[in-house]
Amino acid sequence: MKSWQQLAVYIVAAVLITASVTAAITANVVQRGKKDTVSFSVEEYAQLRDLLVLDEIMESVQTEALHDAPARADMTASAARGIVASIDDPYAAYYTPEEYEAYLSNINGEYTGIGVVVGQPDENGALVLDVYKGYAAEASGVKVGDLITAINGRGAANMTLEELLNEAEGEIGSVTSLDILRDGERLQFDVTNMQINVPRVTSALFNERTAYVRINMFTGNCVSEFEAAFKDLTERGMRSLVIDLRNNPGGSLESVIAIADMLLGKCTIVSVKGRASEEQTFTGKGDGLSVPLAVLVNENSASASEILAAAVQDNDAGVVVGMKTYGKGSVQTTSRLSGDSGWLKLTTDAYYTPSGKSINGIGVMPDIEVDLPDDMKGTAIDKIDQENDAQLWAALDYVRDLAEQNAA
Image (tube, rainbow, N blue to C red; front, side, top):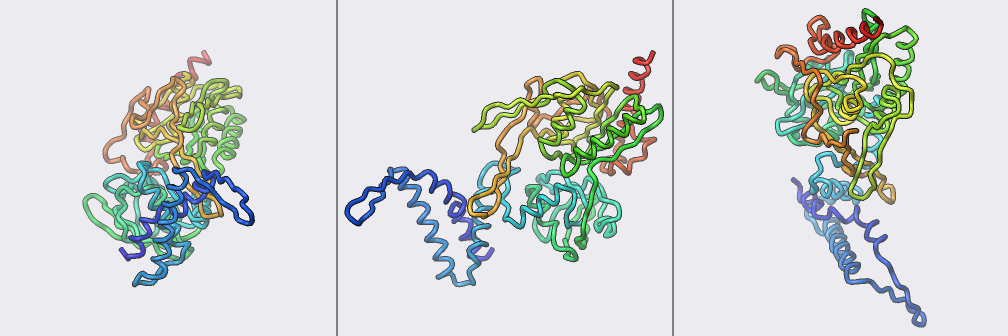
């Protein structure tokens, strides 16, 4: 690592705490003739002294370091990432204004990238959950079930998901290098970035008017897409509904609450409580679903997916089918830093199911536990042969039987 990069880590708080220090300082200005005197408390002076020391380091890097010094904006970004890395929050992230725009484009389903969905990185790397048909990753040979061990030369183990996505995204025509582990074999792919446009919701009407809706992520236009699909299926006379959340890594709290409201009617959806905020309970206000419901989940269903699954389960609005979910019971908040110096995302709240349980690190246990055969695990959900999809059939059989009973 270059010396200026190492020094930048130590100036972490220089930029990010400037606003908070300034806001915390209560200055008492006393007029004495033509002179102004500003007085501080001991605590306020200590904060200011620390800030001045860090600012001195930044100045030294720019004026005395042997190697070329980075621009102050680059040191600011390094400092910000350093302070985020120093806290025990795997979902925290700092974004420059440019990075934040790319992040928003990504979650909205329109972005420049390689065309994959990946799970939360762990100590081994990041699992490829889906490869979008017709995009660069598929053309390069990347497959669902591949384990990304490094990206652009950086080890992917224990990266945050945002760090990995930032590495994977670049200008159209730029190349992302992936080190892949596949069935014990180590592979390397160079994938050219391109414009990606991905719908979040797909739907179909199966035999016996059983409706099927897959939500691949609670981001972008998923609410309007779900609403349109739900309206279409209702008008076509659906008698039961299966919602597929398998391999759905989550998304926004607002999106999942809006979709849950369409399904559950008047009930508690989720409660959220943070260190600096009062507990907030979100409730449904709509009429709710009038046909049998099953929600499909697996070990890669996380965050917002777990909120919906737990809400359906706790309110006896349907059944959860599949395997125990990932277990991410926290909510992240993104806020703009002063002076347009970037955006900070922190885990600020924990969420609780309608029954008051936290599923963080635990997951949601399905009512009907069904696993896929080993040779089918790691296959993209839309590429699983429906005839052999035991999880889907368990859900279909349940809602169809119940629909028949209701009709009798």
